[in-house]
Amino acid sequence: MGSTMSDQSVSNTSAIIKNLMSIEGLSEAELSRRINLPQPTLHRILSGETLSPRGKSLHAIASYFRLSINDLLAPSNLTAATPNKHQTIRILDWSKGCLDNMESAISTEFVTTDVDISEQSFALRMNDSSMDMQFPKDSLLIFDPLRKPKDRCFVLAYIAKEKAYFFRQLICSGTERYLKSLSPDLTGVPLRKLEPHDRIAGVLAQTKIEY
Image (cartoon, rainbow, N blue to C red):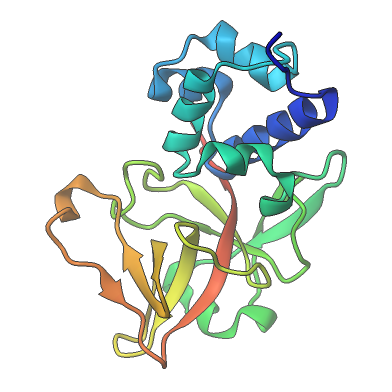
């Protein structure tokens, strides 16, 4: 007889997928549409009803989030959202120089999140279309400066030469780190290498899209 995932494994996998969806601001219906997986199938995986999800379904989910199937089955690799824990995060303004002095920046806007993040976390509204494939302009981005940057995560990076901040996907290759835009209009633009004076100001913890 074929083996099935344990109840704990199903719960862990469901929590990981839900956290990934929360980070990118995706609803169940939207993820279903993007990965071409029937919503009832996705719902059964997320609710834990399916004790042995088809490899094809897990592959579609993992591929979309740029992970391996093992990543979905290994909860130690990803941080799950903490239920019933709400924090109020400041929304800073790109245009007012707040990013150069985040600790003392004053904000008049706030957002609530249930993701497990540090008290130093902050939020920004996406200010252009350079990441439009997944993060439309005006999306609310919540960053945690204490999270460790990992390959293919999304970061807010400070480029010293330009004295400016950019929201990009981080690509790691050996000891080198690069920034990548997701906009179709910038597909011909080479990856930007992070130099010694550049720095990661925060790792994306959650996205909220307001309609």
